[in-house]
Amino acid sequence: MAYRIQSIVRLLTLIASTPIAPAAAQNAQLPRLYTNEMSIEDATRRATLAIDDPLAVFAFVLGALPDRVRTYPTENYYYFSFVLNGTRYLGNIRLPAAERDSGKLRFEYYQETSAGSGQGSAFHTILDSSHGVAVEKVAPLTYRVTQGSKSVIFALEDLSGVRPPESAIGPNEEFLGPIIDESGMRFYLVYNSRLKLFHYVLDENSAGADELVRSRRNDRLFIGRRTGFAFYRDRRLDQRILIGVREEDSRLNTYFDGPFDQLPENFIKGESLRDAIVDFDPSVSGEIDRFGNFLDGSGRYLIHPYIRYRTLNDLYAVHRCASRSERAAKYYKCLASNDDGRGGVVGRPIREKRAFRLRRETKEIDYQHRRHTRQRRPL
Image 1 (cartoon, one colour):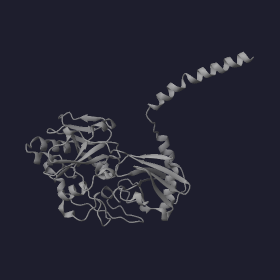
Image 2 (cartoon, helix red, strand yellow; image 1 turned 30 degrees about the horizontal axis):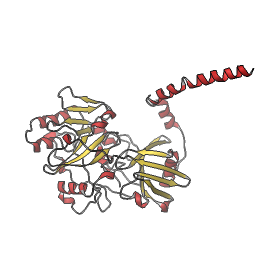
Image 3 (cartoon, one colour; image 1 turned 90 degrees about the vertical axis):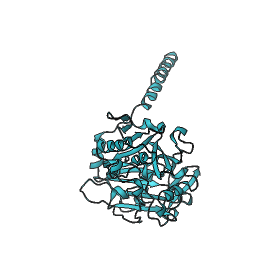
Image 4 (tube, one colour; image 1 turned 90 degrees about the horizontal axis):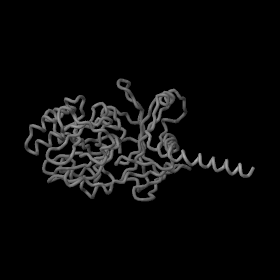
């Protein structure tokens, strides 16, 4: 009897150890599955939440998070969404570089609306110990946020060792810092002091986050199949420059509206960003801090050197402009067009896009122009 029991135990041990480990390793490599069933059930589910009370909503969001999360975007926004009684809400918890060490965070959420449905409600507030919310630095780029009995560690993305290759930086160009935006794509923010131009240059190490498809009409234009980001392969330097994002993504404020709202906040050296902005636009001298934030609290300076394209013809206009330009000044201005959706010499140079300010309130906000105000832009 004892022999039979020992044999059964050995057999069960063999069965348990043989298939499970390889299966676990295999499952770790499989994609996540998202279903329409889940979406419909979220939309039809009835729930109770004091949506007009930011502290109550913050408690719900923080309580739903695991004990540790990773914040990818470099302006330190942790994005979330939820559906309450048929309405989808978008929002973020932000740990700004200028405020988090003093125990503050920013919390924001708003109603997602479809075209033609009118403006939804939006809420933005600053939370600290006076609201029962504690923000504590536990390590470099690592913070513990606590409300009541719930604590969550926010690990901010560490790109401190990221540098562009020498072949991607030209004369009179300064690397201001690395960027990762909500799409998961990484960029180098570069400023050319002679040409007075900013560029977002693709970090090729992140190119695997999207399938970049080369245009059939020329070998310099690449478009992301997932993100819709349009890149131009520079003929002068070994780099691909972001020249456009889809107009619809910009209008609807999706994760694919481009990196303009994710500057390298944690990795700016000294006054380099402020100096570049003032050199580009002297009218804001004395009005912004080292992060590009306006001192009056109205928002941050907009750096948007790419177009919002509607069709491929908009991008081909950029290529035509660049292909006809021999001088570096005109050539790179073709690749830094205003975001009016046309591009090239048809669009205005980005320099004509002056300082961009945003209204901030601690109570309900009317997002009259969602494309400009954005869930990210209030500080």
